[in-house]
Length: 87
Image (cartoon, rainbow, N blue to C red; front, top):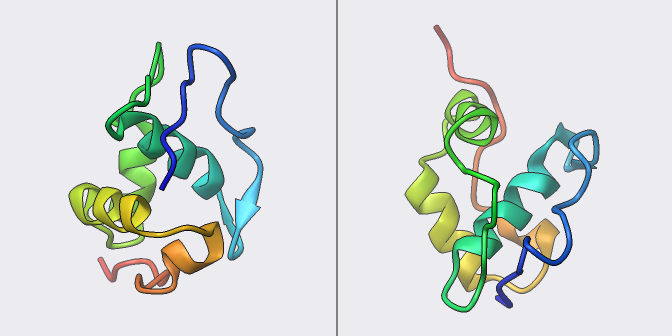
């Protein structure tokens, strides 16, 4: 996966969706910026991105590994369950 430089251009908008999940495309962009050769700039993964992934039952490190290994956004999330965790 090609890393992103978020000091040059921002991640996708917070309200964009992927597989019906709001904020997921933005989180993917932020994770791509943490890959070798990327630059996350003023953005962070802790915060809303981490909270969204936790709600979906997805470990941040596993998500990062999946993003790094995949080429297309839709394929990146196929291996994860998108059902919220039971309380």
